[in-house]
Length: 456
Picture 1 (cartoon, rainbow, N blue to C red):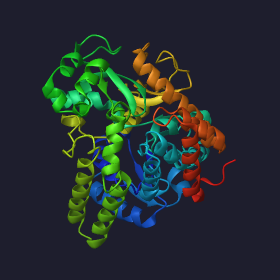
Picture 2 (tube, one colour):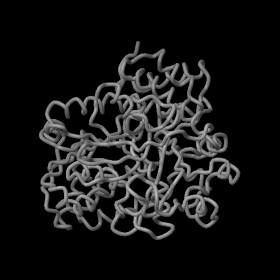
Picture 3 (tube, rainbow, N blue to C red):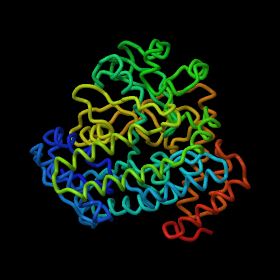
Picture 4 (cartoon, rainbow, N blue to C red):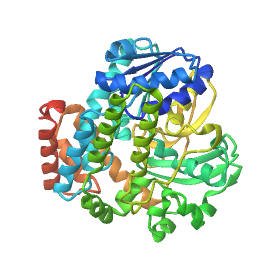
């Protein structure tokens, strides 16, 4: 197998290497290609990855390139994890949003739209290239934010072998695995909603393949204050937790605690984008400063640890981030989602996880071609969402409104349609004002004209 990572100079890429090494034999992995259009960053991060692979006696060859054709040609599986506009683009979006008194978060609301303006055309170009020169029936696994909206646009554009991946879709599964000490492979969760707007209503231990049977543990855990304190559920108000009766995706904090989240974010000296820009610059400077691989790995772990600790710190009162990864041999972090899918498709071994895929009847009330975040089975035949059926009305109504925004936003970006973009932001629950939407779209287009071009 040839596996390609587009955006391979990204700071999260080294986290893939241990998992790739462990799974190499099962995948028959022969080549790993990292492609990035930033040659220096690729050399620094890619060099670190090469050292990690060599230290682990990885059985595959490792390649670095700035040429997407070279990277994609003949690949069976392609991971996309790019950031058009870099961290400075994210910081610009956040500051525009804060000037207008709305949340600035790169996957949620107005700033999520601005990120999608840059991400969707770039990912679509790679997807077209994959169709043209990758191996027959190659699959694309997209991590680029906003993952659900990107997947929706790709689906509208006719790209079919694509999976939107976000590790937060499996937050409940990971949290239960960690808290009760059960390996992740024994934990089954039923997640539904949209990317960064999802709920988990059931977690079973040792369930049957259809998701029934086994031991249902989630209701008891949601009533256990120790479990709440040990997970991000602690950022939600007690009454809200009781009302929802589900494990909440952490990004629902921006909806259910909108005002306090906005106030906390606007009070910070740095936006999250500015913070990650500073931390990334620090990491690259430290990697440049020493040729010693061990010192480079230490620098990487230090900076990424700082980045993880400050994730959603506004909601946690400055406390360190709660560890959410699974236990035992499954401790691969975000890499497990993509590599689990790749292994299932390549070997035919069934795999169960939460993904962003077309609904196809899984969640009642959504169109078949609506990309939703839902539990899925993956095997040699592809991806099959699990039928969830009806969901509680308050959750459905919120998700329906955000889905209306996503439909409009995806089509607006594909067609460079300014009026449709304004309509998209106007219907978003976190904006809800047409004049405000006009101002935001105008400023985003002006700020990122070099990347997104002129819109009609």
